[in-house]
Length: 469
Image (cartoon, rainbow, N blue to C red; front, side, top):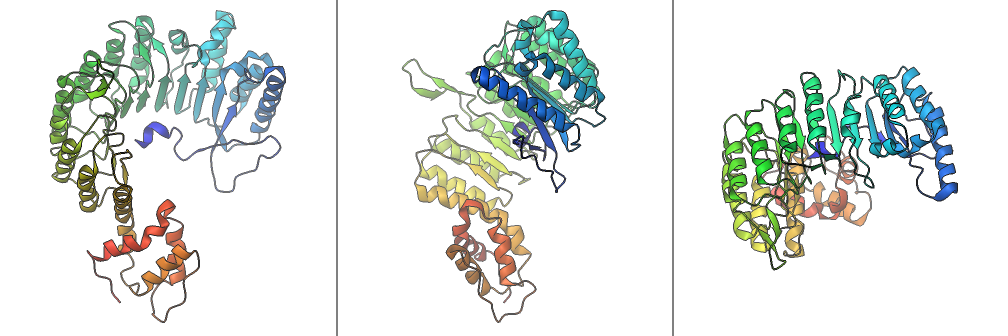
């Protein structure tokens, strides 16, 4: 699921040195990251303060910096606090995102009124941002989310809301639901509550109730939240009737009954299900009384339902203790789909052996859409894992190779041999639209860590397609 890890699209993080801050030439967009001052003692704190102030000053002339990331402990210093507010309040640029790390620590250092005013000024100045990340401190996971959410203005352009690492009780959940109701009809497409802990019996259900109002919600992440079946099942029932949900991340929760598998299977097999990315990694595993890893459910109904789904492109079933039987059933179901649209599959950290890997190899050979497959574990032969990776990359190169069927077949061994040897290809007497040197450079730049296996890729490819000489 690329959307979970890529917060700012193609925008880059600018980890710069204050003495070497180059101007970009390719139109890149960057993030201003203000670092924490709580490490390194007095001397380290002084260096961090100096660097932060210089970065804030230089940002005033840099319109390519549109993201702001704050380790909130830096705002303990009143000069930095004023510089941040002045920058975002009087600067005419369109800020894209705001990330605040350890925001709940500030309540212990400022009076409630000062903290409230600070948040109000900052949020109002950034009311047109698209991405808002509010991360609870890893050192102090105290309450305070309701205070922060109450100060969020009406963001008319907000697309991603990430509230990660919080402890959410009944009061915080109620405030969050009201906030979602206020923003839902506008533009929020992604809601992430990764690593949150929901305190009390009804806190998660209260948040789920707020999701009903988010008509444009496309992706939901509740991974690492320690949710059980009583919380996951109502969420899946809500997903069934949600009009636009396409990405759901349930990884590392604690479902222990078969009903969770059956409910998800029923959902993805329905004709109106639009799910494109589903992550159920380590959802159904845990330790037995003897301390051994075990799976509590039978995943076969879920895998069978995949055969009736035509939209799924990204599937993660890693860490669910899948053996040869389950892997074989999974691949058979994916191959039986009418729409062969699978792009990415993660079956890592599962104890299937090389017999299970053979079925995976058949999957990537027959499904030309598969370009990314993860299956790392210690139960397979190295040669078999390499073969699957190579075949997956053959699928990637199929479309490219198909464009150059007029390229003389006799030149391919020359090109690939030279790549292996690290030298440029020799000239050929054959006439073609592209030179061997051109295709050599093109492939060399795109082969990644498996460049030395190109000869095997092309040999596998040539068994299925004829090349003109």
